[in-house]
Image 1 (cartoon, helix red, strand yellow):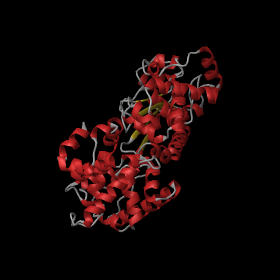
Image 2 (spheres, rainbow, N blue to C red):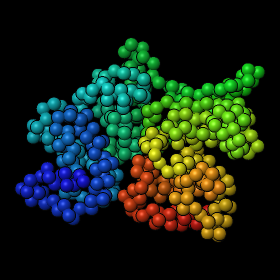
Image 3 (cartoon, rainbow, N blue to C red):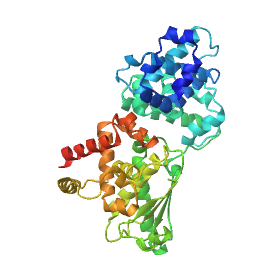
Image 4 (tube, rainbow, N blue to C red):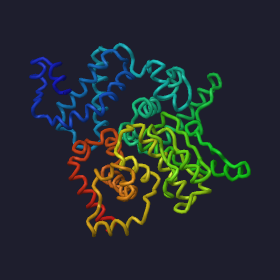
Length: 417
């Protein structure tokens, strides 16, 4: 456990001087903070002053957090609080002359830049020189978003701006950066199309025009929602491939389910990289053009979320997609009210088994309401934390899984009954 590791790093004099009472600390919540944020804090220190002493200074941040735990009143996010402690420690080190280099040298190695930033502009060069041309605020926003993986909410809290203002400032800065990169050899920035590979398969040559229209409309729907979905989870780091099949029979055959049910119109591969779908022009008896398009947007949102963690429960995987696409399936109010009266609302464990059982228990509909409840009550930060650790109910929601289920059912009663 990391607390014991910190304890070993401090001698008795340090422990006495800092008044650290290890046994009085809420170890569960503190270890959760450490596991969630240590890598990001370490990366901030590497960016601000280089890798030398970064490990020790990152440990020092969490020591300070332990010392001043009582001062944290949830007026900001945990990460924002840790970020401020980090910056204060770096400034203190500068004042003491422990760091000779100036802050924000951006001396990260090119490989790190390629991995964490240039996926967004398809460049494989060291961006230090380009970033130096920005003012301090724009540099900070770009760094927090793409190097530290901060949400817009976290950035807004750190820099003291509204979320909308942060977004506008970031997009203007990225436009300037693209211009700078184009000036350096004419490299082409990545477009939405380079994140999404969308193709009609086995298409009828006599129907090319209509198929092309379908492709363009699906691409337009995904493009219109790309920024919103990646803001909720994380920027894309892997291209997502979408394959459109001309009819249900072909789709079922190509996905290994030749006798699949009529409601089965789209699927996402286990690795989250490929979506296969039936053409909206031939959706079958149980779907429409619009419902097929919604289904693809749902799977696309799931694919984005799975970049955080591919091993998540079936209900969470499905619920994220349906919620982001605003595609709940069924008449929510009528069906939820009826199931509440009969006492047959499923448990989370019952929504994480066989796909047939999941469907029979109205898993698509109920998974939508679970994610809806999480976002409404706890926010996207809690949803991202659950994706990263789907067993951490106590750390994320301050209750057990059973208690969480009861609270969710209370929410269903209030909203839908």
